[in-house]
Amino acid sequence: ARALRLVATHEGRPLYEKLGFETVGEIACMQGVVTDAQTHLELRDATDEDLAEIAALESASFGGDRAEMIAQLAGCARIALLGAQGDLRGFAACRAFGRGHVIGPVVAPDAQAGLALIAHLAQPLIGRPLRVDVLAQAGLEPGLAKMGLTSEYRVPVMQRGDQSSGGDRLALRSQGLC
View (cartoon, rainbow, N blue to C red):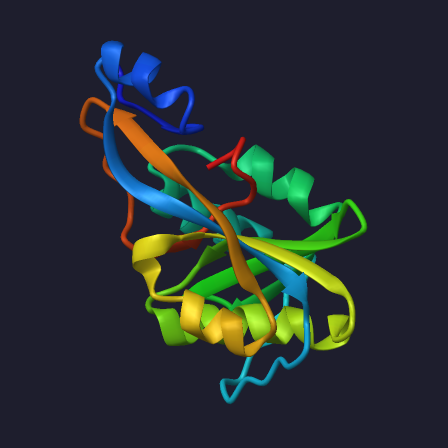
């Protein structure tokens, strides 16, 4: 009876449709070697004191409790923040992944803020591989292309039931963990 959301493969899509899932969006896997990463917004790196507020923002965006996921992520990722303590408006996390790095989740009020958070985290990665799994409708692809990333492939986001989540989720932690 509860709402469920998943990232499907094109091959798995027919099975999920038979189980009552409907396509509600698309994920673009953006990857490449970072060639440029500029931001004009004032951002900061997270501290331990920010974790509860990050978890609250992530949980509201996701539509469920994500405090444990944020605690785990804090142990292995650099987290960039938009906003002062007590007025957090966005965040993004970057961690080692395969031969490079991955940025996600990205939660921000708009594409400009999301791109700024990504660029802040990508600046030390110029010349290195990076991956960001973005919601296609978020409008990040042109900005990520300027950073040197291209869309490698797209996959459907599917949902069964009503699931409320914030419209501020721009990129996933990973396709396995929306």
